Length: 268
Ligand code: G3P
Ligand code: CA
Image 1: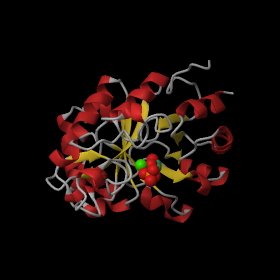
Image 2 (image 1 turned 120 degrees about the vertical axis):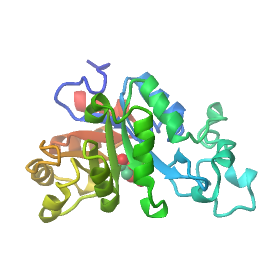
Image 3 (image 1 turned 90 degrees about the horizontal axis):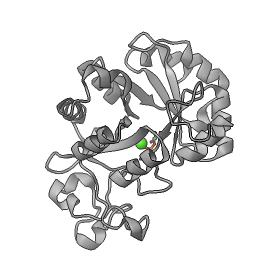
Image 4 (image 1 turned 180 degrees about the vertical axis):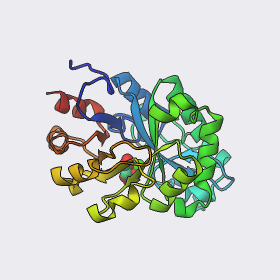
């Protein structure tokens, strides 16, 4: 049906709302995951970084300038990196106006607040540890927070959470700390490298332009650390033709700013 909910759409790839439904609401805000929920999508993706005083927050860029009014509030603090601001300073920023005036006042969420909303919305999360080289220890801290919020309880950990990173070291660290957590490596390792990745990653989440039917089949032939065939999610696909193309490769998931557009394409 055209209103099929993500996760209930039969055999097609799962549709993941990238930074929330970020085509329609400011990325990585609570408004963006609420928008995904309103559209009927349960899987969302985010990016996690750390403030100067050690708070985990949800933001894509290492810097605050693109998606907030930080330059106006703190004109003498260039280059406005997240790690140079306290959580209290970041809490004052407007993370919505850049996207549209109706989102004025949207905040950079703390990860704790964000996880509460994901739970409230009955959603599921692909959590990206972003720039881990800037934040030593962020893997352990992220897992601690997830545990405190109930996200590492058995029912959650097996079906509602995937932790991913472009850093293989970071993904391996997450796996070593909490072997029950599902993980994904962001990238496209060569087929020859896949046995190494299969030790700690359940999935390969790839730039869609690097994928092919042959590559997706090759990944599927390996078993991840939980003994199940490795999956492939493609990012970031925002149009119907692109969605049909990667669905044709046999991907297990599509990460997109426009989940409704992609769902329609894969349902047709
Ligand atoms: O989820 C994959 C995708 O988000 C990786 O790229 O830059 O959007 O974090 P980026
Ligand atoms: Ca991301």
